[in-house]
Image (cartoon, rainbow, N blue to C red; front, side):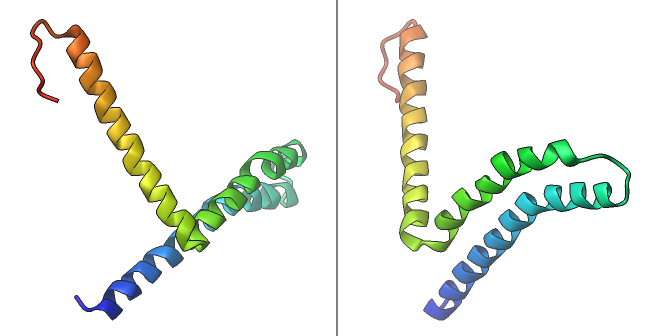
Length: 104
């Protein structure tokens, strides 16, 4: 795979993630507004929840998607958490094992 193809795939993934996160953050609000407009439900109490909880999630996710440094930081943090989980499992297994083997 050439360097251009690799960059193209990375860009495709990034654009896909941006579209998906925007979609999942905004669709509940749009559906509630449409149902309210059609007088199916009274979604007035939900607007506060959307504006305080759901829509700020999109604002938190967007910098992670747009900034290459923060995106790389996210993946490095993920690797650290996986290693930490592995070490925790090893420690717990050593505590509860009857033999003192160093398999981890």
